[in-house]
Length: 615
Image 1 (cartoon, rainbow, N blue to C red):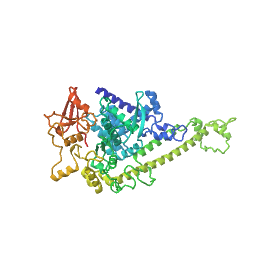
Image 2 (image 1 turned 30 degrees about the horizontal axis):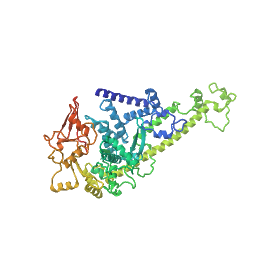
Image 3 (image 1 turned 45 degrees about the horizontal axis):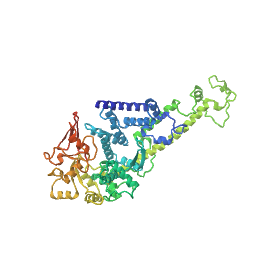
Image 4 (image 1 turned 135 degrees about the vertical axis):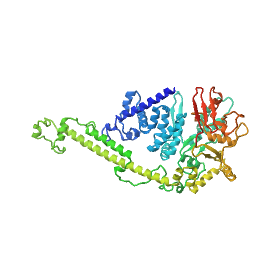
């Protein structure tokens, strides 16, 4: 099975390279150009993915004929293949060697390929491939890791993409495969979706009538219908949704470090907005968070700028290369006589004869045409005009007009391209100014800090006071529990201790260090130990599983109690299904090392290891 998967991956990579080679043989310069009859509309041209900018619009139709697929599938295949070849070469090579399988492509294409900066994109791709090496990694796990790295390395672009995505929030419906059923889809932000799911689950858990054989999911669906359609008739008890938010010092101080809400990575801006909505953080003071940034702008926004009519040499190298490539193709096609529309003149010797004559002059529409006796009698010249002939009946006349039309079209294209060049240059310059101003601000210094302590030192006093107030916030009100401080190893991301502001001050005053909670005396872990293990593991530790460790139960003793202690070193967080499998699946072995590494051996001898997810 593994060998078959590797061969499928290799052939998928070969197909991507073949499609890219085919696309290169179908240049967009061969299509009708803007301004010509039958050319692609400006709206459709703008809607095409960037990787198809140099590809003929008719290439997809040829793939339809060659591969017996739909037009939509052909266009998707073109985009995927060109993206892999030109934007994700490392992923394509790993696919070709069998290190990845086809399912791994989607998170790479969806999360890594859109990163605009090629240096950042290559760095994220390289780090992901290194992280995957030697471990069981499902596409869902790869997607989550890619989101975290993308948020950390490309915060500005991620913020822009999030702003665009927020405009797509809404509700839609589509038919299910089963007749009579439909899927109601709700697109929300992560905190909204997690809170709605948790609230519906809590409502469903209150329905415990005897004889009710509905599943929890069915109860949640019925609760949603009752709450939305029968708000005055249902007898559901009010519930409070519970969200677990994990955010670092740099995230809360205004930096770019991503955070987690309900176990899903989110941009730092989103978690700060949630904290402000709950009254845990004050509204930001522009003087504190955006010092040095032009008024009214934030990172990722375009700062005001003055148009700069600079030379071609000042353009970015990629823009300059694309421009030169485009003009070279247009010029080559024009020289071959391939430019023009449906009214192109035939490329015959007669037109070339007239165009090459020393006395050739542009035709004047106001002048009456009458061939001279020399023209009529020339043995090498065009045939003499016969009865009923006119200037329009001579190919050289049509050729001249076509050349004039082509020249006008080229002039229009040149002007449009010049405007596009200036816009690209100005946008790049504005982005650079915005980035420089942000780097010099307090939030920028926090983001670039090498450690949390350095970030605290870089933050302004009001920012540090706001963070201290958040850590001092007590349970109750909008909070289920007190905010906890996760002390993390800066290099590995491993959780070292979990405490709160009161306990931290007490330990500092007593001169005691921070460490995991002490072992509990009985079978069940004490509150502090239970909280620490769940915060350390967060998700089921079985290889490939991303289910959350339930809020109650499912902490397993690696060495059964009482032979093994109830301690952080002997406890593992599982989901319900994999906890059952650990004890009931025949032939499986689970071994927990003191450093938290869990090694699972299957009945067929496959071995996989996991470690607690880093912070």
